[in-house]
Length: 515
Image (cartoon, rainbow, N blue to C red; front, side, top):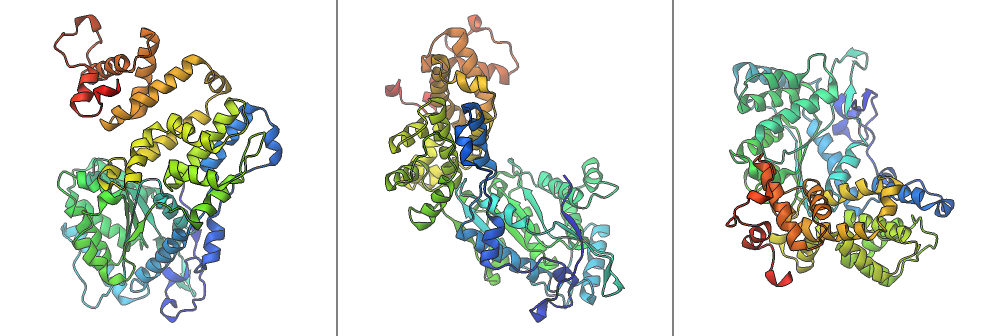
């Protein structure tokens, strides 16, 4: 999908330091808090008449809550203000009409040609400052930043400024996801790909570097050159906690971020879970200490006014025959089962309505909230228990689990009617219970749920048993055989071979008393 590209239109600036700078004047006007809330708020399509539709249609209506509902919170105003300030401050001393801009462009080119780091230019004082956003998975960090960035065009094409030629293509922002393995080379490639997607050059930058045997140091130098050449306004790097897995450590990439901030003047925003905190200590923190922006710690919502406002805004969208009122007891039940995490609250609200529609009860009570959460959100129960105990070490283990659950719910809602109605059958209920009982153990061993689910169903149908221990053992055997690319021949298994259940027990994932 092509980036949002616009032709430069220059706005008169109120603040004198922002005047006569085309990179700043071409940005949208500075927003007030009320404007930010209004622009970010999204409401799903909804009509009360839809509550009278057949169940098969109402099931599909529920997916609108996952994709079309968005309620901004106070943190959104904070982040929008930080981004607005960082962008403009970063462009202050990067005015393409100024002498220092030309000197830095020349130095950037020479550094690339000589395969070295960009050097400091005397008299060039970049004003860039970055900040970090740290929070539990599912609170809405990434979605908030993406929503705010979408208020800005990604690329602005300049041609004339007050009648004078200005052939500048300005990339306002780039957002990258840090690779799951923390690979610095892969992150560099993602940068080049993001630039390609933004400016759509005739000769792809990504292809040039992917085919060559360029070193990471050279790639970093070229990233600096591109940031300078295209007047990059802001670089956002998400899932930064993955840098801890990089083979060479995270120092090289953090040093690159520092160079962007201190040498060229590009603000860098890093987003991650609490596991990213040790990575961000030291040098990068020093680079942004004087900025005044600091770190934004985005905690889950507390059971107070913000939580009530959020649930109230969500509660308007019901597709049940009998509309359920929002009571204090219901608010407490939802908080207990989601611990103030936005994504989980929306998912639970979707699931409990789906349960009411499929069961034909067409209503639900506070007592149903816990039941549906335990049955349909089993994957996140360990995470929720960790949050209730406020055990940070346990919380860190489940950083991606909310995303997995969201994908699972989305997949189920978009299934066909026959599959939905089959959930009423005893066989499907048994399979669902087996999935809920078994999947968490494989997730703890770093397997993806979509890899394991087909095996659970296969073993259940082949063996006609709902014994969790038996099915877990056989699934474990299938997985190991698949990994070694050997055919599954159960009759040749050694009696001394460790069973799947024993493997989980030896790793401390199950308690024999529970079986």
